[in-house]
Image (cartoon, rainbow, N blue to C red):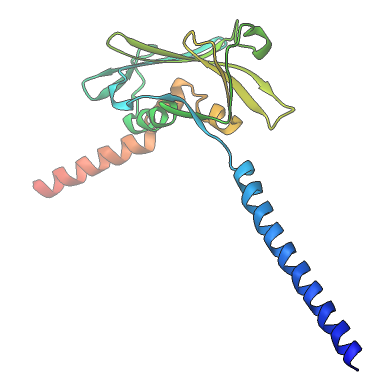
Length: 196
């Protein structure tokens, strides 16, 4: 019986040590694995959106040109369109703080990323400062991200497709809706009626 108890005790100790080793190994693996999986985000562009006074968006043959006069944004392409300032500010909030998932430094051949003759650009300007964001090809094999370049930097960045499509705008996307205009008119009329 003594031998049997000894053998059981040794077996329990070995089992306990194996469990402890497994637990510590799992903790170490989990800690290192999580560190590897955390995405590294880099700012492609980080500028104060309140400084921007001119916006240019080119998408092939379509273009948008907006200019800020005082606190009001206007279309330089069609002055009959009333521009919704909130929509412009929302666009600028995204355009002025773009983050990248991947950075490719020291690029010499921009053609391989579709950035040499790209017809997709966004320009943000004020005073003597000009930032041109060139959007290149989409890489459908790696999550559908897009290649991006800022000004004449020799760095290429990748941005998520959701970011790219969020920046794809036409003049109509910035136009004040008829509902907003009517609501404003009706509110003004009601206020006028109450005053009388």
